[in-house]
Image 1 (cartoon, helix red, strand yellow):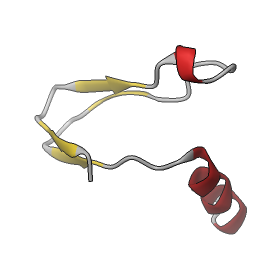
Image 2 (cartoon, helix red, strand yellow):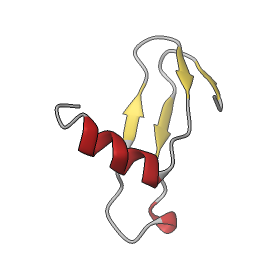
Image 3 (cartoon, rainbow, N blue to C red):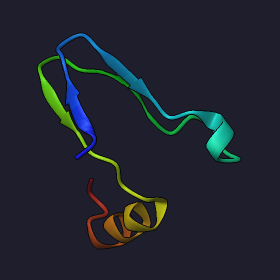
Image 4 (cartoon, helix red, strand yellow):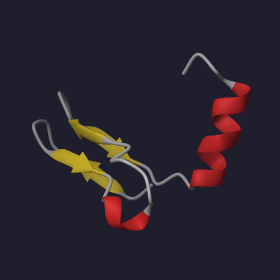
Length: 52
């Protein structure tokens, strides 16, 4: 866990850390827990849970 986000706050994936387009940009509709997930873990999740 990285932290908490209040409703209405936002988060964006900075493009300077990757060569591709911005992967994530979101505004939270309700209070949320923020978690950091590595690109390797995202690849595994995509392979195992293709519907996500």
